[in-house]
Image 1 (cartoon, rainbow, N blue to C red):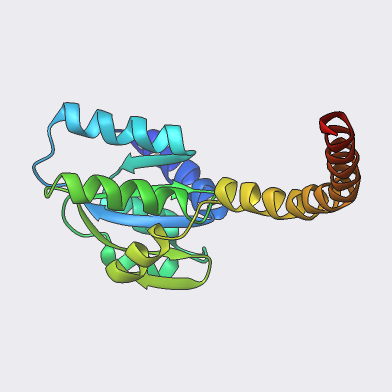
Image 2: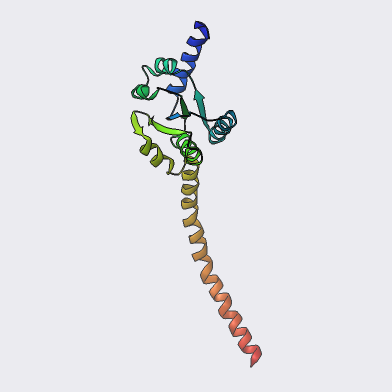
Length: 172
C-alpha cells in the first residue's frame, strides 16, 4: 500500500469515526473468510459496518476525534464495528461472539463514553432504535383503541338488553 492509499484510508476512517454513534472494538483471531463474510453481512443488515484495518493507521485516524480514548485497544488482530444507531453494532458483535468464540469483544465507545466489554454487552441487551419506535407507536395507539372500546360498550349493552327483551316477548 503506497502513501497516497494510506492517506486516503486514514481520511475515510476519520470520517467514519466522526459520523459514528457507536464504535465496537473486537479481536478476530482465527476467523475464517466465510465467518468474517457472515459477520460483515450481519453488520450490514443491522445498519452497521465492520472493518479490519492496520492498527497504526486506525490510531492515526482516531486522533482528534471523540473516540481517541479507544486508541489503546487497537493492538493485535483488531476489527471495529461502526454504526449510527447506538445499539446495532453492539447487538451484532455480541450475538456473533456468543456463537463464535474466535471473536472477542474488547470494548468500545458511544460518543465520549468509553465502554468495556461488559458495557458493550449491556448495550446489546437494550432494544434497538426501531424497536423503541414501535413500542412508542403502540403506546400512542393503545389509548385511542381503549377510548373507542369504551364508547362502543354502552351501545352494545343497549343492543343486548333490547335483544333480550325481544326474545322474552317471543317466548311469552
